[in-house]
Length: 170
Image (cartoon, rainbow, N blue to C red):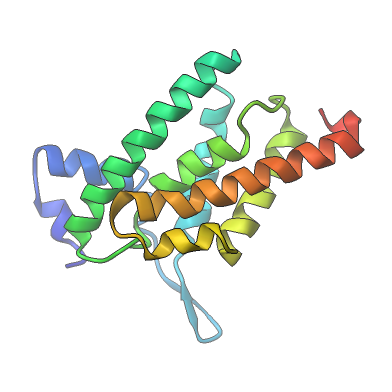
């Protein structure tokens, strides 16, 4: 099953290209203690960061783009899940991409904000707190993307709290 996606052609190959962040998630597996960790989610989030700087600055345009990106990610991740044959396969990183963009939505485009948003999003996406962790039980693209969007909303609120407390970060 590991190389199956590479043998498929046409639209399926494009879906897997998008879902895996241009195959960034096909990285070696490291063993940390007794837990396997591929780092795919981290690398997917890193790949999303520079693109955030290119996203629209105008709030309405950002909202429209983000809504379309999340909807597309739900569809693409759902299709990729079927191809991989397992729910929320670690090779799917498109959810991290739209997650970071959501974590940084409507915030100033500065490096400190990017760093805070990145840090809070990765932390909250890793610990999977309720209620957004419940999306893990939902099959398909909504389940794959939903928990990341929940973590991203929480991360966005934490960044806003930091900016309110330390306005110089903006």
